[in-house]
Image (cartoon, rainbow, N blue to C red):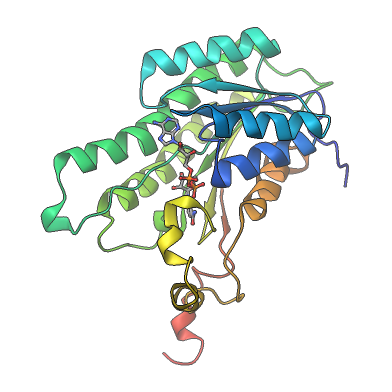
Length: 268
Ligand code: NAD
């Protein structure tokens, strides 16, 4: 397979200063794309990702924006397009959890999660699609006018007690993704999701950072290891490339088998 299969393409990854977003930014850059590293708050981790990509010979730029704010998202896309000339790939990745048992969950927790995980995906996808439609297909760059990848979760399928806001946001991403995939396919824009299982990042540190916690988590993962951001980065690089040109409206599950009902391995 061509290791530079995204050569000449420009990508924007939200929440790319840490975890899965960072892994995706590095994988897209490794495949030849110039990458906007979106972040919120402290700029240092984003600058580190940019420096890592540059020192490997790639092109990257950090841009701050809160993806739940329309004005900030629009400014971020203007800056990105000004710097890179256009965009070919959006990875909607920025996401948060505000966990609480349902009876105690506050409206603020619910709204905060939905505004980043779902409204943020809408705002960024709309800006990206507007640019893809404006520019159209450039055959020397890609067979598609643009690619949108949404990082959802196995919790677009698996209900998750104590996390109804998060699970609702991920289930929402599934129908959002499929609907805009249907709407944008005639314009040669591909829209897909990746549903990670358990990946070692800050969002779920408590689930893997002691041997006991990791052993409990592994009971849910038939392949016998907790995932790492690179597991999702390589899938994103493939999905963004022309190797996946006939794939749209799909959720690619990357979970080491978590959605295979592991408790049925020895029973049922
Ligand atoms: P993470 O906390 O390392 O990454 C989330 C990133 O989003 C952070 O860099 C954070 O600063 C950024 N962010 C938060 N709010 C933002 C906002 N308003 N605007 C811009 N950026 C914002 O955790 P992660 O695990 O890398 O999460 C990335 C995505 O992967 C999330 O959508 C998460 O739901 C999803 N996911 C993670 C796992 C896992 O096991 N880690 C599993 C399934 C899905």
